[in-house]
Amino acid sequence: MPEENYSFKPTPEVRTFGQLVGHVADASYMFCSQVMVKQTQQRKSKNEDVKGGPGGCAQGRSGVLQQAFEGMTDAKGSQMVKLFNFDLAKLTVFSINTAHTDEHYGNMVTYLRLKGSCRRQVKISPHRHRSKRLEHLTQQTAMSW
Image 1: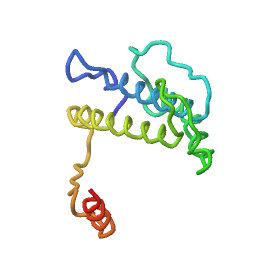
Image 2: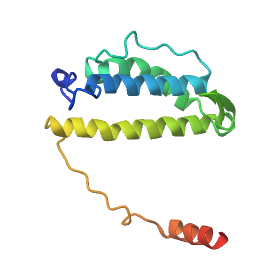
Image 3: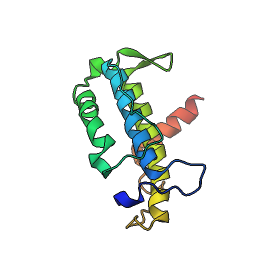
Image 4: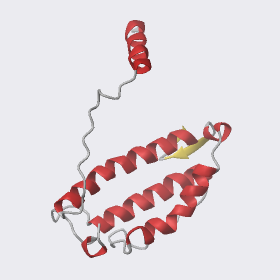
């Protein structure tokens, strides 16, 4: 998305594109900080637009994200941490972060398409890539019920 469109919002009730980028960056930083057991630092205003594309807020947070992912091992991934008052394995926190980011990717694509910034259409057939191993596991699971 070009920086001049970061203030775009499809309707008055939703975040601007820049606010959405900031939200995703803040949330990813918070999740990874929990995994690293660090205190998080939020942006001053959640209503501000993030400027500068990836060079803005998201870039400043990427060091913590990279540290968290690069420092992960199987043993560390099974360690428990608190997240929203729940005890979760560190790898589960990464999974929640991924799900959250994926959800907002869907939001962002809508913004991009509305502004004509989405250059290609991706068509995925959910069944085309289904492996024989997955089919076997699905059948085994169904039989065990």
